[in-house]
Image (cartoon, rainbow, N blue to C red; front, top):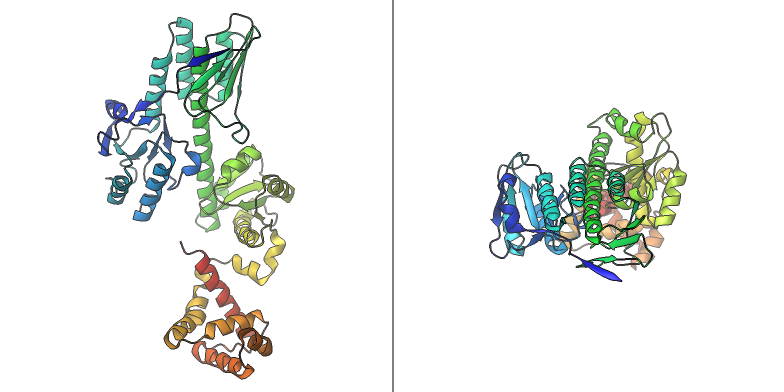
Length: 475
């Protein structure tokens, strides 16, 4: 038999704004915004947090990434696309006032925008939501009310889900288990929260609004289904808070990786993270994976040091075997560098980043051996280091072709692809050999490098490669 439980709880945006201690002010939105239901406050500094949003969250940020009109537009578009309740910008940490571009984009897409006073933590919003949930759903039983109060206190102290289950089991008698639904095989319900009462005495299970299962087993009488529903809500809040903390920790480590790789911080800055992961004194293999894969990799490799950087996700292991096994099991491309010690982490990050680019190009895992080619060497160079090749050897030819309608750059590219063969270039471009020779002479006159000479042809090949990469990575 089935018993209905109240739907997942949330507060309307207008109710949150009316809570004086939160220091909220509605900047964009009026009557159309106030009825929007807020189920959760999600703190992030990402400009596109779509992978981490489910809808109905109030997306909170101090705006450290909202420094341009484009970044403001990306955030507003992401919030709009996921059906989230709105954006809350904390004032004082980065911005003294809300960026005009953010206000403009929120008005354009009808996304509510709230200003939060300096000094008020974003978690205060979740405290208000959690308290309201409990007040709305708490039963008349004093024991149940005390249990819920205890769980809320544990929630505020960031207690792990295991502790919440343990406290709940002790209060109810019997045992509780919490099982996450697999969205691939069982899509979660979208609106209601259902309790399914087993026919077997001493068993009761509740399916939450997110589709997860909270099951109780013990000696009769069974607890109220409403109480299990409240415990389930607390567990889901705890789970989301843990996910947010884990995401923030990986992003902080990703920022450290970026600083170390760019020489702006010493590798010793990563020592506390390496110690926590038990990696100190070991040979390290650093692998780079596509951006936004950090949550997936963390779920697959629990306890592994993972850095969520903007351009890639970095994973630190003690050998390449884990890299290849994980890539095969998850169906992802990645690249990894040579084994390094702690003092060589910067080199390991650079090699991993370069091999990831090669892996994407070839569609398979790339290791340090792939860096021994000219392409592999160039992939390890910062783009700025190759800019002179583009400016001195490619751009003059582009400008000449644009003015004269000639095809010097195309002929040069074909000549390099044909390994310096005049005849093969002529055939590929349907030209006479003398025409090819004449064009190569014009190139030598314009840029001062003779494609017929090996060293100059290598320089021109590097310039073309750098030019092609710069076009691939233009935003």
